[in-house]
Amino acid sequence: MEQKYDVIVVGGGPAGLAAACSAKEAGAKRVLVIEREKEAGGILNQCIHNGFGLHYFKEELTGPEYAARFVKMAEERGVEILLDTMVLAVEDHQVTACSAALGLICLEGKAVVLAMGCRERTRGAVAIPGDRPSGIFTAGTAQRYMNIEGWMVGRRVVILGSGDIGLIMARRMTLEGAKVLACVELMPYCNGLNRNIVQCLEDYGIPLYLSHTVTNVEGLHRVEKVTVSEVGPDRKPVPGTEMVFDCDTLLLSVGLIPENELTQKAGIPLDPATKGAYVYENMETREPGVFSCGNVVHVHDLVDFVTAESQKAGKAAARYAAGERCPENARVFSMKKDGCVTYTVPQAIRLENVDKKTEISFRVNRVLEDGLIEVRDKEKVICSFKREHMAPGEMEHITVPAVLLAKAEGEELTVSAGPQKADGAQAGGEVR
Image (cartoon, rainbow, N blue to C red; front, side, top):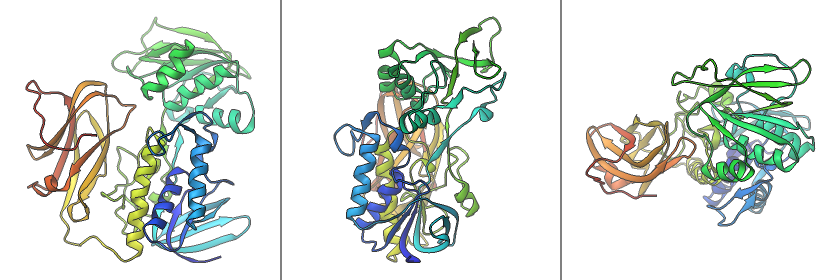
């Protein structure tokens, strides 16, 4: 096979496919996507529920339908897709991979896009006490067993965590005849989208216990009982609040971890807050010519946002492959967080690389009603945005015009979120 490409994309999920299509549209002649599964599409292939594509395609699609459209788009644009192939290392634009059909292969890309997605936290990551019987699954694993393999994972179910996959599996299990006894969340707020709370829990009468956690699992061969306790402000169980559920299955929806082993092995710095690569405004990492996008950078709530971010990365990768470079003397703003903001993406903005505006994505660490987002240059607010509602389970996006960035005097920009000020003041900026 061809050994040299303009752009090599690692990962054939929604992020990788969108980046590859965008790179082709931006002029890259040879674009290769490497995917470890036997089919492209990533996690979307097991997400048979609808709700995808409302932003990008302006219509409601299932996960496989959304994936199929991008596979078709990639094929129409001449993107090469190498399936059933595992990438072992990325170093100096050299991609080492292996497959049963081709053996060990070494490929070279003028630019590389990392789009490996994320994986679920397991029981070991959250230290659930008790016995270790069968019947404990991550929500995504249960989803694959049911939707791809056709296996029913249980009949009486407790779900720990209120991430979107867990909420969706509560509905899925109910529709298949299981009894979902409870969805239990450690935090005082839900970590999933509000529409999933309504459509997957409330519509089916499934109780959601906030500020609760699983404190014991009982069972010899299979799960028999799960004990749930209320937690205090210190997140520790409160004695005397125990509830015991007779069940045969415990599903875990306790967070996602970006698949960044390749990124770390390549020596690319990670942001400790996102566990993803430190990226600039065009999704370029600190390794020139290596870009990162999608859930491997930070966990998104909607695949449509993954697509938009990945298209940006693919376009930038094509430009890099064509010889375009950001000036070495570019003015760089480091992004800082304040107030309720937990992280920002990008982590730095190069002014000379911003065309007319740049988008900043972030999450908040608590629910805010009538909130105010501010971007500050030292103590000066350069733009602000009002939000009626912000929650940890929903990613926020703001767009900052380049003309406002150019007026900044310092080398750092701070993004903060909190309650609106008494005077309700709001500076200029584009509200999304």
